[in-house]
Structure formats: structure tokens, C-alpha cells
Length: 172
Figure 1 (cartoon, rainbow, N blue to C red):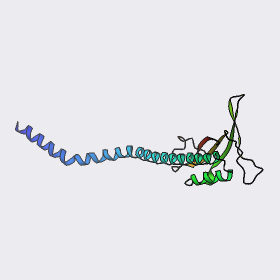
Figure 2: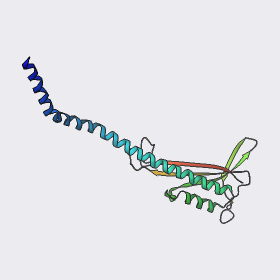
Figure 3: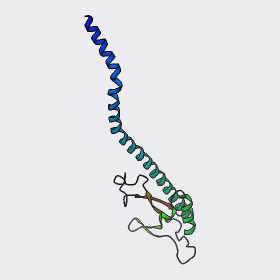
Figure 4: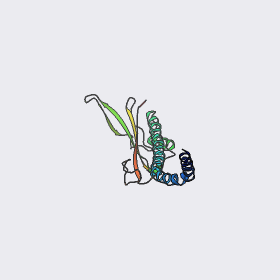
């Protein structure tokens, strides 16, 4: 009976002395497995946040431009309002389409044409009261993570995704 107690006491002492050495290797292996996943999730969250910010800014710029067109301002004023609202974006990269929609009663659909009477300078807004004015914006968002998420985001050239914002309002 005495020898049994001493055996368990000596095992307990050995276990206390060697516990740190055994855990050290397993912690390194666990870190090597978990760290890349955490880094990918972190960069994914950052990338998603930047895309979301640019999308909100693009939609706000489309709304401001559409509202300016709805009150009858010229196309140069519409573009200036869009540029001011999208100031945090690279405004030179924004592609915009200003369109006038007319309802066709026979087909029951709206027909869109380019907004503006090009005979005047600055180009006059030729949408009549009751017509729709539609502003479509496209913007190439450059991925901060480069090619890391390019397949998931369906990126063009592996570095940018095309964001789109559209707003339609009735001409007053």
C-alpha cells in the first residue's frame, strides 16, 4: 500500500514538471492551423466593409443626381451634384448614364433615351413633367486584398469588381 502512494506522488511530480514541454508543441500546431483562417476572415471583413461603403456612396450619388434631374436642372448641374455626393470615390472612374423614361401606353412599358437636348449649351434637361429620369452609375471598386478574394467577388482582371447604382424619380 505504501508503494502505491509513492508511485502516484512521483507521477504527479513528473506530470507537473513536464506539462509545459508537452503543451508547447501542440499550441504551435494549433496556431499554425487557426492563424491563416483568422487572417483570411479579418481581411474578408475589411474588404466587405470597403465594398459596402463604396456601394452606399455610389447609391447616394445616384440619388442626388436623380433628384437634381427630377427638378429640371441641366445635365452639367446633374453631373456636378453626382460628383459632389460621390467625393470619397475616384470620380474620374465613375461611368454615368442619364436617361429620360417615357411611358408607352400601347406596350405598357417605359422607354428610355439619353437625357438632354444637345442643341443647347449647357445641355438642357428635356424630360417633361410626369416622365421618369433615371441615373445609372458604374464604378470599378479596386480590391484591397488583390487576388485573395477575386474569385469570390467575380473580379475583373482579378483586381476590381464593378459596382452599380441606379435611381429613378418622376420629373416634377
